[in-house]
Length: 348
Ligand SMILES: C[S@@+](CC[C@H](N)C(=O)[O-])C[C@H]1O[C@@H](n2cnc3c(N)ncnc32)[C@H](O)[C@@H]1O
Image (cartoon, rainbow, N blue to C red):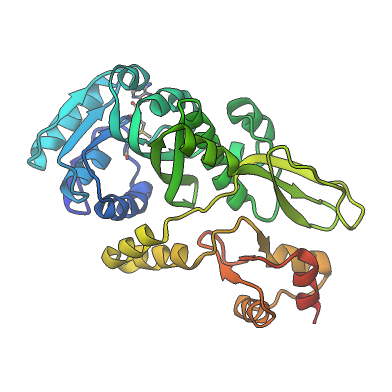
């Protein structure tokens, strides 16, 4: 069977993984790859059918693409798919960790089954400029599988009303920590969460300065289960009890820095169409702050009917606060307002 995706054709095989549900993710990836300015080479490290690498070459504008998969059947299929799309590239049949230890790559794409953990050390060693990572074990990052998050990533989280925000930032924070071991720092170009996965695109810079700056952007969310208050502190910072008297829970480490490069997202919008345009617009309009609230969860706690999102956003802005929607939920907003200010607006 052959499927069409974007501008490419992909032959499928029942012994090689291909998920049609990730097509939208790959459509967004193509937008990112198109707007990067320094495209030297791209490693599709866990390639499956080769769809990502083929789209990186045909639609993303990469001259040199490498493919790798340890499944020999995937390697055969990648070669057939390269022919089908008229492209030439080197295809490796190795354990991705070995390949990334043997050779350094400009742009590495990691699209594993579930967790990226087993590949992060070698990818961090190898990567020179760009790193794209998928994680589908969202439960470990967002707090619904707390023990697994601790074991795999040394991230402690529990479920809160803004678990997608915390999960995505926990993944970025984890990848940043892995890179920092090799004196590499990051900037987040763009990232998103949708359905069952997180996807992050990072610019990597190798320098002591960059890695020091990156580590300074790691920290924790303080969350009071009693009153739903939340705050953020850097590593080593002191905190006190919540104003309500409740004891804070500490979730993290998570990334507290920006979650997008506005210029990259603006350029992505120039090419985005239809569903992708709507999604990228939502990312563009979202504030960079980690301070987010789920208005429905908060309204339930206050025993009031949740207001229309547009109304509460307007109220916040009219009262001098920043406010935006988020790309991953219709009931979550971001703002610089403290919970007491938000509650007083919700109650007014
Ligand atoms: C989720 S699939 C990749 C899907 C593909 N990137 C796509 O967009 O359709 C993960 C792939 O990684 C391969 N894989 C798993 N562990 C690996 C390893 N240690 N080294 C190399 N390939 C590996 C599997 O054979 C599988 O094809």
